Length: 386
Image: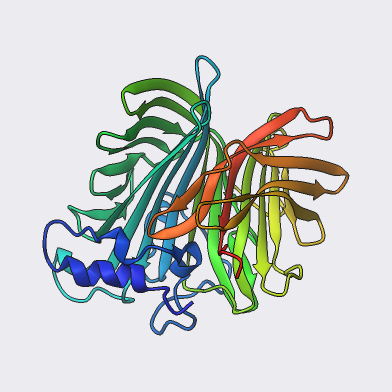
C-alpha cells in the first residue's frame, strides 16, 4: 500500500509547468483503486470524523482540504433497437498538500485522473481511456455555484447546479469512442451511511452521497457508429483523507436500479483472512415511498440502511483475465426475505489503465430468473493468485 500517492506524484513531477500535464500511463500501470485513498494520519489534511450539514450546490464541488475525492457517474443505457450499453465516467482528485503551494494557477496542489469507459454488450466490447492533469483552470478542476463544471482536458461534465442538476457530459477518445449525453436529476440526493458520514473502519470514514435514477439521453460514438441512447444514471460523490485498514485487500461495490423503483447500494469490504468485515454496509431507497425532500438519508421515509447482518454477497462465478486475475462476475445478493442474482453482462469489463479494477454493467435477476433491474459493479484489490 506504500504506492498510494505515486500515480499523482508522477503526474506532478513529470508535468513541470508545461501546458500538457499528462503523464504516461506506463509509468504507473498496475496500481489499484485502493491506492487513491491517501495515507493514514496525513498531516494537515482534514478528516471525515463527524456528521456535517451538507449544503448544495456547494458540496457538489471540491473539498480540497481532504486528500482524496471523486465524481463517479455510471449509466445503464439502451438504443432504439434494445441493444444495451454501459457508461462509466470518473474524475479522481488527489491533494498533494493541504494548502496551495504558492500564488498562481500552477500552485493548486491538486492533481486529477479521469477515466472514461463504454461497454457495448451486443458487440462484446469494453472501451476505455484516461487523462492525467495537474489542477489548473485550463487543464483540470471542479467548480460549482449556479453552474457546475468538472473537467480534465477536453472531457467535461457541466451544467446548472442550483436545485436539481441539469448537466451535459462531453468526452471522447479521438478515433475510438466518445459520449455526448444529457444528465438530469429527477429525485433527491441520498446521504449514505449516518447522514452522509460513511464509516469504512474504526479510524476510517468518508463523506458520501449518491444521486440514483438520473435520466440520461444523448449519443454514443463507437468508432464509425453513432447511436442514440437513453437510460438511468447513478452519481456517487465521496471525499476523505482515510485509507483502508491493513486487514483489507479491497472492496466489492454495487449500485442497482430495480424495475420496482428501488435503488440499492451494497458495499462489501474484503478481508485478507476471508472473514466478514464489521463495516460492510448498504442502503435501499424506495422511490415510491419518498416525500418531497431534496436531501434524504437515515431516518427518512423510503430509506433503509443495511448493516452487515442485513445482507450478504456471495460470488457464484469467476472470470480469469489475460493477467491470470480471477474476478467474481456473478453474485448472489440476499436481503431479508429476498434473493437476487447479479450477473456481469460482459465478463471483460476490467479497467486496466494506471489503476487496475473491474467496473461494469450488470443485470439483476429474481429467483425465477426474470430480470429485475440493471446496475453497475466495482471490484478492487484483486491480484493474480500466487
